Image (tube, rainbow, N blue to C red; front, side):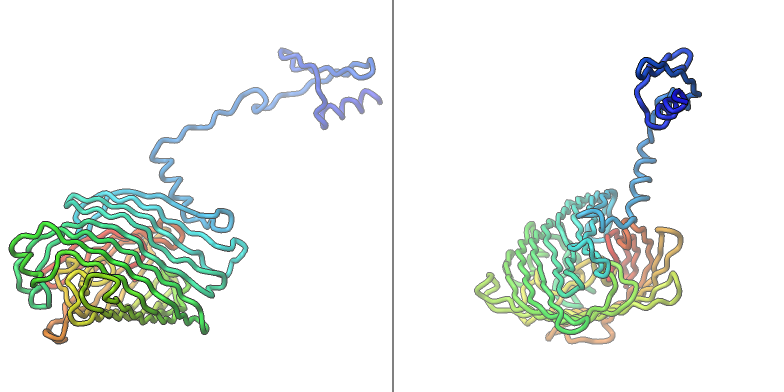
Amino acid sequence: MRRIIFTLLILFLGLPAITDAQTQSRYHIIDGDTVHYTYTPLVADTMQQTPTRQNFIRRVVNYFDKSTEDHTFDKKLDITFAGGPSYSKTTKLGIAVLAAGLYRLDRTDSITPPSDISIYANVTTSGYFSVGVMGNNLFRNVKGKIDYDINFSSAPRDVWGIGYRAGAHNPKSEMVEERYLIYGRYQHRILPNTYLGPVLNFEHIQGRKFNEVSLGYLEGQHHTYTATGLGASLEYDSRDFIPNPWRGAYLSVQGMWFARGLGNCNKSLWRVKFRANSYHRLWSSGLLATDLYGEFNSEGTPWPLLARLGGNERMRGYYLGQYTDNNLLTAQVELRQRIWRRIGCVVWGGAGTVFSKREPFAWRHALPNYGLGLRWELKQRVNVRIDYGFGRSTSGFLLSINEAF
Protein backbone atom coordinates (compact mmCIF):
# COMPACT_ATOMS: atom_id res chain seq x y z
CA MET A 1 0.00 0.00 0.00
CA ARG A 2 2.85 2.31 0.88
CA ARG A 3 4.50 1.66 -2.49
CA ILE A 4 1.25 2.51 -4.33
CA ILE A 5 0.95 5.85 -2.47
CA PHE A 6 4.57 6.73 -3.28
CA THR A 7 3.97 5.89 -6.94
CA LEU A 8 0.93 8.20 -7.18
CA LEU A 9 2.86 11.05 -5.53
CA ILE A 10 5.67 10.72 -8.02
CA LEU A 11 3.36 10.60 -11.07
CA PHE A 12 1.02 13.48 -10.14
CA LEU A 13 3.18 15.79 -8.02
CA GLY A 14 6.33 15.51 -10.11
CA LEU A 15 8.68 14.49 -7.27
CA PRO A 16 12.34 14.25 -8.38
CA ALA A 17 13.43 10.88 -9.66
CA ILE A 18 16.51 9.06 -11.00
CA THR A 19 15.92 8.24 -14.70
CA ASP A 20 17.33 5.43 -16.77
CA ALA A 21 17.34 6.90 -20.28
CA GLN A 22 17.65 3.58 -22.08
CA THR A 23 14.84 1.63 -20.37
CA GLN A 24 12.65 4.69 -19.56
CA SER A 25 12.44 3.25 -16.04
CA ARG A 26 12.51 5.55 -13.03
CA TYR A 27 13.44 4.95 -9.41
CA HIS A 28 12.62 6.99 -6.37
CA ILE A 29 13.96 6.31 -2.86
CA ILE A 30 12.06 7.46 0.25
CA ASP A 31 12.99 6.35 3.78
CA GLY A 32 15.04 3.42 2.46
CA ASP A 33 12.23 2.07 0.24
CA THR A 34 12.78 2.01 -3.52
CA VAL A 35 9.80 2.54 -5.82
CA HIS A 36 10.16 1.39 -9.43
CA TYR A 37 7.86 2.50 -12.25
CA THR A 38 7.90 2.75 -16.06
CA TYR A 39 6.07 4.99 -18.52
CA THR A 40 5.63 5.56 -22.24
CA PRO A 41 7.17 8.94 -23.19
CA LEU A 42 5.20 11.44 -25.27
CA VAL A 43 6.66 13.07 -28.38
CA ALA A 44 7.06 16.35 -26.51
CA ASP A 45 9.21 14.54 -23.90
CA THR A 46 11.63 13.07 -26.43
CA MET A 47 11.75 15.68 -29.19
CA GLN A 48 12.30 19.44 -29.00
CA GLN A 49 9.71 21.27 -31.12
CA THR A 50 11.32 23.69 -33.58
CA PRO A 51 8.90 26.37 -34.81
CA THR A 52 8.51 26.55 -38.57
CA ARG A 53 10.23 29.63 -39.96
CA GLN A 54 7.87 31.71 -42.10
CA ASN A 55 9.04 33.50 -45.21
CA PHE A 56 8.92 37.28 -45.51
CA ILE A 57 5.69 37.44 -47.53
CA ARG A 58 3.84 35.20 -45.08
CA ARG A 59 5.02 37.35 -42.13
CA VAL A 60 3.75 40.49 -43.93
CA VAL A 61 0.38 38.84 -44.64
CA ASN A 62 0.06 37.73 -41.01
CA TYR A 63 0.99 41.24 -39.82
CA PHE A 64 -1.79 42.91 -41.80
CA ASP A 65 -4.26 40.12 -40.99
CA LYS A 66 -3.97 41.15 -37.35
CA SER A 67 -4.00 44.90 -38.04
CA THR A 68 -7.81 45.13 -38.08
CA GLU A 69 -8.16 43.58 -34.62
CA ASP A 70 -9.14 46.11 -31.95
CA HIS A 71 -6.29 46.34 -29.43
CA THR A 72 -7.16 49.78 -28.09
CA PHE A 73 -8.34 48.25 -24.79
CA ASP A 74 -5.06 46.42 -24.07
CA LYS A 75 -2.50 48.75 -25.74
CA LYS A 76 -1.76 52.41 -25.12
CA LEU A 77 -1.38 52.85 -28.89
CA ASP A 78 -2.60 50.29 -31.43
CA ILE A 79 -0.39 51.20 -34.39
CA THR A 80 0.19 49.71 -37.83
CA PHE A 81 3.03 50.63 -40.21
CA ALA A 82 2.69 50.54 -43.98
CA GLY A 83 4.68 51.68 -46.97
CA GLY A 84 4.59 51.50 -50.72
CA PRO A 85 4.10 53.46 -53.93
CA SER A 86 2.10 56.69 -53.98
CA TYR A 87 0.64 58.71 -56.81
CA SER A 88 -1.46 61.78 -57.46
CA LYS A 89 -1.95 64.07 -60.42
CA THR A 90 -0.26 66.87 -58.46
CA THR A 91 2.78 65.06 -57.01
CA LYS A 92 3.34 62.17 -59.50
CA LEU A 93 4.79 58.74 -58.62
CA GLY A 94 6.59 58.29 -55.33
CA ILE A 95 7.19 56.27 -52.19
CA ALA A 96 5.13 56.84 -49.05
CA VAL A 97 5.42 55.48 -45.51
CA LEU A 98 2.63 55.68 -42.96
CA ALA A 99 1.97 54.88 -39.33
CA ALA A 100 -1.74 54.73 -38.53
CA GLY A 101 -2.73 54.41 -34.88
CA LEU A 102 -5.84 54.16 -32.73
CA TYR A 103 -5.95 54.77 -28.97
CA ARG A 104 -8.25 55.51 -26.04
CA LEU A 105 -7.48 58.03 -23.31
CA ASP A 106 -9.49 55.81 -20.96
CA ARG A 107 -9.13 52.12 -21.84
CA THR A 108 -12.03 51.21 -19.55
CA ASP A 109 -14.40 53.36 -21.65
CA SER A 110 -16.11 51.28 -24.34
CA ILE A 111 -18.67 53.97 -25.24
CA THR A 112 -16.36 56.68 -26.63
CA PRO A 113 -15.01 55.91 -30.14
CA PRO A 114 -11.23 55.53 -30.33
CA SER A 115 -9.01 58.51 -31.15
CA ASP A 116 -6.80 58.33 -34.24
CA ILE A 117 -3.39 59.56 -35.35
CA SER A 118 -1.55 59.30 -38.69
CA ILE A 119 2.16 60.01 -39.22
CA TYR A 120 3.26 60.12 -42.84
CA ALA A 121 6.11 60.91 -45.22
CA ASN A 122 6.11 61.00 -49.01
CA VAL A 123 8.81 61.52 -51.66
CA THR A 124 8.05 61.54 -55.39
CA THR A 125 9.79 61.64 -58.74
CA SER A 126 8.68 65.23 -59.35
CA GLY A 127 10.81 66.46 -56.44
CA TYR A 128 7.88 66.70 -54.06
CA PHE A 129 8.31 65.68 -50.44
CA SER A 130 6.06 66.00 -47.42
CA VAL A 131 6.16 64.95 -43.77
CA GLY A 132 3.43 65.45 -41.21
CA VAL A 133 1.15 64.25 -38.47
CA MET A 134 -2.62 64.58 -38.20
CA GLY A 135 -5.36 63.16 -36.02
CA ASN A 136 -8.41 63.46 -33.80
CA ASN A 137 -8.26 63.22 -30.01
CA LEU A 138 -11.58 62.42 -28.28
CA PHE A 139 -12.18 62.94 -24.57
CA ARG A 140 -14.44 60.74 -22.45
CA ASN A 141 -18.03 60.57 -23.73
CA VAL A 142 -16.88 62.98 -26.47
CA LYS A 143 -17.36 65.94 -24.15
CA GLY A 144 -14.51 67.56 -26.02
CA LYS A 145 -12.22 66.84 -28.95
CA ILE A 146 -9.04 68.12 -30.55
CA ASP A 147 -8.16 67.78 -34.22
CA TYR A 148 -4.80 68.85 -35.64
CA ASP A 149 -2.63 68.84 -38.75
CA ILE A 150 1.10 69.67 -38.74
CA ASN A 151 2.85 69.48 -42.08
CA PHE A 152 5.89 70.57 -44.06
CA SER A 153 6.05 70.14 -47.81
CA SER A 154 8.13 71.23 -50.78
CA ALA A 155 6.31 70.88 -54.07
CA PRO A 156 7.09 71.71 -57.70
CA ARG A 157 3.78 73.21 -58.87
CA ASP A 158 2.08 73.92 -62.14
CA VAL A 159 0.30 77.29 -62.12
CA TRP A 160 -2.24 78.93 -64.42
CA GLY A 161 -2.91 82.21 -62.62
CA ILE A 162 -5.82 83.41 -60.48
CA GLY A 163 -9.48 83.06 -61.43
CA TYR A 164 -11.72 80.67 -63.34
CA ARG A 165 -10.81 82.03 -66.78
CA ALA A 166 -7.10 81.80 -65.99
CA GLY A 167 -7.42 78.13 -65.04
CA ALA A 168 -9.48 77.36 -68.12
CA HIS A 169 -7.48 79.28 -70.76
CA ASN A 170 -3.99 80.36 -69.55
CA PRO A 171 -0.91 78.34 -70.54
CA LYS A 172 0.55 76.23 -67.74
CA SER A 173 3.73 77.45 -66.06
CA GLU A 174 5.96 76.25 -63.20
CA MET A 175 7.30 77.18 -59.77
CA VAL A 176 8.28 75.53 -56.47
CA GLU A 177 6.26 76.08 -53.29
CA GLU A 178 7.44 75.38 -49.74
CA ARG A 179 4.71 75.34 -47.10
CA TYR A 180 4.75 75.05 -43.30
CA LEU A 181 1.36 74.43 -41.73
CA ILE A 182 0.26 74.18 -38.10
CA TYR A 183 -3.46 73.77 -37.54
CA GLY A 184 -5.22 72.95 -34.29
CA ARG A 185 -8.79 73.13 -33.02
CA TYR A 186 -10.43 72.37 -29.69
CA GLN A 187 -14.17 71.71 -29.57
CA HIS A 188 -16.21 71.60 -26.35
CA ARG A 189 -19.68 70.08 -26.28
CA ILE A 190 -22.32 72.67 -25.37
CA LEU A 191 -25.42 70.69 -26.45
CA PRO A 192 -25.98 67.09 -27.56
CA ASN A 193 -23.68 66.55 -30.59
CA THR A 194 -23.04 70.32 -30.75
CA TYR A 195 -19.56 71.77 -30.21
CA LEU A 196 -17.97 75.21 -29.96
CA GLY A 197 -14.31 76.11 -29.62
CA PRO A 198 -11.20 78.07 -30.70
CA VAL A 199 -9.06 77.49 -33.79
CA LEU A 200 -5.38 78.24 -34.48
CA ASN A 201 -3.91 78.30 -37.99
CA PHE A 202 -0.30 79.19 -38.88
CA GLU A 203 1.00 79.14 -42.44
CA HIS A 204 4.36 80.12 -43.92
CA ILE A 205 4.63 79.82 -47.69
CA GLN A 206 7.61 80.57 -49.90
CA GLY A 207 7.57 80.50 -53.70
CA ARG A 208 10.80 79.76 -55.58
CA LYS A 209 12.08 79.05 -59.09
CA PHE A 210 9.60 81.26 -60.91
CA ASN A 211 10.00 81.72 -64.63
CA GLU A 212 8.87 84.78 -66.56
CA VAL A 213 5.33 83.45 -67.09
CA SER A 214 4.69 82.18 -63.56
CA LEU A 215 6.14 85.37 -62.10
CA GLY A 216 3.61 87.33 -64.13
CA TYR A 217 0.79 85.20 -62.67
CA LEU A 218 1.60 86.64 -59.21
CA GLU A 219 0.30 90.02 -60.39
CA GLY A 220 2.97 91.88 -58.45
CA GLN A 221 2.53 90.01 -55.16
CA HIS A 222 5.39 88.90 -52.89
CA HIS A 223 7.09 85.52 -53.15
CA THR A 224 6.82 84.75 -49.42
CA TYR A 225 3.92 85.15 -47.00
CA THR A 226 3.36 84.34 -43.33
CA ALA A 227 -0.07 84.41 -41.72
CA THR A 228 -1.32 83.46 -38.27
CA GLY A 229 -5.04 83.09 -37.83
CA LEU A 230 -7.21 82.90 -34.73
CA GLY A 231 -10.84 81.96 -34.96
CA ALA A 232 -13.79 79.94 -33.74
CA SER A 233 -15.70 76.92 -34.94
CA LEU A 234 -19.29 75.80 -34.37
CA GLU A 235 -20.31 72.32 -35.43
CA TYR A 236 -22.91 69.60 -35.12
CA ASP A 237 -21.37 66.12 -35.23
CA SER A 238 -23.29 62.85 -34.83
CA ARG A 239 -20.81 60.69 -36.81
CA ASP A 240 -20.00 57.36 -35.21
CA PHE A 241 -16.29 57.36 -36.27
CA ILE A 242 -14.55 60.40 -37.78
CA PRO A 243 -12.07 58.76 -40.26
CA ASN A 244 -14.75 56.51 -41.77
CA PRO A 245 -18.34 57.29 -40.70
CA TRP A 246 -21.07 54.69 -41.19
CA ARG A 247 -23.91 56.87 -39.95
CA GLY A 248 -24.68 60.36 -38.72
CA ALA A 249 -24.30 63.93 -39.96
CA TYR A 250 -21.68 66.67 -39.74
CA LEU A 251 -22.29 70.43 -40.06
CA SER A 252 -19.50 72.93 -39.47
CA VAL A 253 -18.95 76.69 -39.78
CA GLN A 254 -15.48 78.07 -39.06
CA GLY A 255 -14.33 81.68 -39.11
CA MET A 256 -10.67 82.81 -39.06
CA TRP A 257 -9.13 86.26 -38.56
CA PHE A 258 -5.56 86.75 -39.79
CA ALA A 259 -4.43 89.87 -37.97
CA ARG A 260 -2.03 92.17 -39.80
CA GLY A 261 0.40 92.19 -36.88
CA LEU A 262 0.72 88.38 -36.88
CA GLY A 263 2.09 88.08 -40.41
CA ASN A 264 3.45 89.97 -43.41
CA CYS A 265 0.29 90.22 -45.55
CA ASN A 266 0.22 94.02 -45.06
CA LYS A 267 -3.45 93.87 -44.11
CA SER A 268 -5.83 91.91 -41.91
CA LEU A 269 -7.62 89.05 -43.65
CA TRP A 270 -10.59 86.82 -42.93
CA ARG A 271 -11.64 83.34 -44.06
CA VAL A 272 -14.92 81.44 -43.60
CA LYS A 273 -15.38 77.73 -44.28
CA PHE A 274 -18.49 75.62 -44.06
CA ARG A 275 -19.06 71.92 -44.54
CA ALA A 276 -22.13 69.68 -44.51
CA ASN A 277 -21.91 65.85 -44.64
CA SER A 278 -24.44 63.06 -44.22
CA TYR A 279 -24.07 59.28 -44.10
CA HIS A 280 -26.94 56.85 -44.75
CA ARG A 281 -27.01 53.03 -44.85
CA LEU A 282 -28.70 51.82 -48.04
CA TRP A 283 -28.23 48.12 -47.24
CA SER A 284 -25.99 46.07 -44.93
CA SER A 285 -22.79 46.66 -46.91
CA GLY A 286 -23.71 49.83 -48.81
CA LEU A 287 -23.46 53.47 -47.72
CA LEU A 288 -24.42 56.77 -49.37
CA ALA A 289 -22.29 59.76 -48.32
CA THR A 290 -22.83 63.39 -49.34
CA ASP A 291 -20.57 66.42 -49.03
CA LEU A 292 -21.17 70.15 -49.53
CA TYR A 293 -18.18 72.44 -48.99
CA GLY A 294 -17.52 76.15 -49.27
CA GLU A 295 -14.54 78.44 -48.63
CA PHE A 296 -14.66 82.25 -48.74
CA ASN A 297 -11.68 84.62 -48.39
CA SER A 298 -11.51 88.39 -48.10
CA GLU A 299 -10.60 90.53 -51.09
CA GLY A 300 -6.85 91.04 -51.36
CA THR A 301 -5.95 87.62 -49.98
CA PRO A 302 -2.40 86.72 -51.22
CA TRP A 303 -1.95 83.99 -53.84
CA PRO A 304 -0.82 81.15 -51.49
CA LEU A 305 -3.80 81.60 -49.13
CA LEU A 306 -6.51 81.52 -51.80
CA ALA A 307 -8.95 78.61 -52.21
CA ARG A 308 -7.72 75.87 -54.56
CA LEU A 309 -9.96 73.44 -56.39
CA GLY A 310 -8.80 69.80 -56.63
CA GLY A 311 -6.74 67.51 -54.41
CA ASN A 312 -7.48 64.22 -52.67
CA GLU A 313 -10.74 65.15 -50.88
CA ARG A 314 -12.86 67.14 -53.34
CA MET A 315 -12.90 67.42 -57.13
CA ARG A 316 -10.58 64.42 -57.32
CA GLY A 317 -8.83 64.17 -60.68
CA TYR A 318 -8.29 67.92 -61.04
CA TYR A 319 -4.80 69.29 -60.54
CA LEU A 320 -4.76 71.03 -57.15
CA GLY A 321 -4.64 74.76 -57.83
CA GLN A 322 -5.37 74.87 -61.57
CA TYR A 323 -8.52 76.74 -60.56
CA THR A 324 -7.68 79.21 -57.78
CA ASP A 325 -9.62 82.20 -56.48
CA ASN A 326 -11.05 83.88 -53.38
CA ASN A 327 -14.07 81.60 -53.12
CA LEU A 328 -14.77 77.91 -53.73
CA LEU A 329 -17.94 75.79 -53.80
CA THR A 330 -18.07 72.01 -54.31
CA ALA A 331 -20.66 69.24 -53.90
CA GLN A 332 -20.30 65.46 -54.23
CA VAL A 333 -22.24 62.24 -53.60
CA GLU A 334 -20.44 58.95 -53.05
CA LEU A 335 -21.67 55.34 -52.90
CA ARG A 336 -19.45 53.12 -50.74
CA GLN A 337 -19.75 49.35 -51.00
CA ARG A 338 -17.87 46.62 -49.13
CA ILE A 339 -16.98 43.82 -51.56
CA TRP A 340 -15.24 41.10 -49.58
CA ARG A 341 -13.62 41.05 -46.15
CA ARG A 342 -11.27 44.10 -46.09
CA ILE A 343 -11.86 45.19 -49.70
CA GLY A 344 -14.41 47.78 -50.81
CA CYS A 345 -15.15 50.12 -53.69
CA VAL A 346 -16.72 53.54 -54.28
CA VAL A 347 -18.23 55.58 -57.11
CA TRP A 348 -18.89 59.29 -56.87
CA GLY A 349 -20.15 62.29 -58.81
CA GLY A 350 -20.11 66.00 -58.13
CA ALA A 351 -19.31 69.50 -59.32
CA GLY A 352 -17.49 72.64 -58.18
CA THR A 353 -16.12 76.03 -59.20
CA VAL A 354 -14.15 79.06 -58.01
CA PHE A 355 -15.24 82.70 -58.14
CA SER A 356 -14.59 86.18 -56.73
CA LYS A 357 -15.87 89.74 -56.90
CA ARG A 358 -14.16 90.34 -60.23
CA GLU A 359 -15.39 86.98 -61.62
CA PRO A 360 -18.74 86.31 -59.91
CA PHE A 361 -20.29 82.87 -59.51
CA ALA A 362 -21.85 81.53 -62.72
CA TRP A 363 -23.52 78.17 -63.32
CA ARG A 364 -21.79 77.87 -66.70
CA HIS A 365 -18.48 77.77 -64.84
CA ALA A 366 -19.48 74.68 -62.83
CA LEU A 367 -16.88 71.95 -63.41
CA PRO A 368 -18.04 68.30 -63.43
CA ASN A 369 -16.36 65.60 -61.37
CA TYR A 370 -16.88 61.84 -61.15
CA GLY A 371 -14.83 58.73 -60.52
CA LEU A 372 -14.38 55.34 -58.88
CA GLY A 373 -12.03 53.83 -56.37
CA LEU A 374 -10.91 50.83 -54.32
CA ARG A 375 -10.65 50.59 -50.54
CA TRP A 376 -8.44 48.35 -48.39
CA GLU A 377 -8.92 48.33 -44.61
CA LEU A 378 -5.48 48.92 -43.08
CA LYS A 379 -6.78 49.07 -39.53
CA GLN A 380 -10.25 48.68 -38.12
CA ARG A 381 -12.30 51.20 -40.17
CA VAL A 382 -9.14 53.04 -41.32
CA ASN A 383 -8.90 52.67 -45.10
CA VAL A 384 -6.18 53.04 -47.68
CA ARG A 385 -7.88 54.34 -50.82
CA ILE A 386 -7.04 54.39 -54.50
CA ASP A 387 -9.22 56.72 -56.58
CA TYR A 388 -9.36 57.63 -60.23
CA GLY A 389 -11.17 60.89 -60.86
CA PHE A 390 -12.41 62.53 -64.05
CA GLY A 391 -13.16 66.17 -64.82
CA ARG A 392 -13.37 68.61 -67.69
CA SER A 393 -10.39 67.79 -69.94
CA THR A 394 -8.60 66.12 -67.04
CA SER A 395 -8.30 62.87 -65.08
CA GLY A 396 -5.91 61.31 -62.60
CA PHE A 397 -5.07 58.69 -59.96
CA LEU A 398 -4.50 59.36 -56.29
CA LEU A 399 -3.55 57.20 -53.31
CA SER A 400 -4.38 58.34 -49.78
CA ILE A 401 -5.41 57.34 -46.25
CA ASN A 402 -8.92 57.59 -44.75
CA GLU A 403 -12.08 58.41 -46.65
CA ALA A 404 -12.26 61.60 -48.70
CA PHE A 405 -14.95 63.01 -46.37
